[in-house]
Length: 110
Image 1 (cartoon, rainbow, N blue to C red):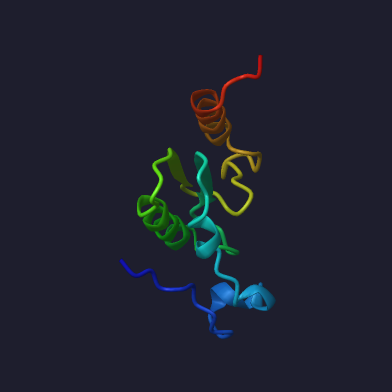
Image 2 (cartoon, one colour; image 1 turned 90 degrees about the vertical axis):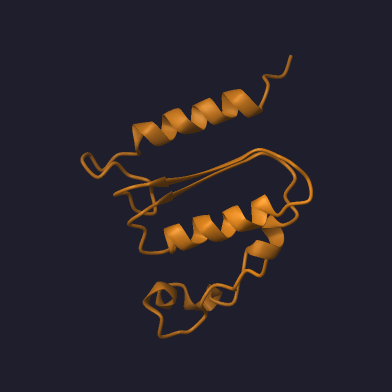
């Protein structure tokens, strides 16, 4: 499966804000990850194309040669900071999801 690189066209509104980083593609780095991954995006993020990022990362992690747990969450209505649209504060469901994830995949040192 071939995964297309992120758009780097300086005229693309998703790229303009971070044009100096437009040529950076994180996927080659993600291909080397061998630990559990929890990643989260806000659907209304104006800095990162959330759905596209989630789908591209899912494709890379699903193709990984080593098997490890990953969970990719998209929080509807939130921006880059995963704020609750009704309060402007960090989403409680994000915190709950992250705590659950950590408790499931990482053990407390004895």
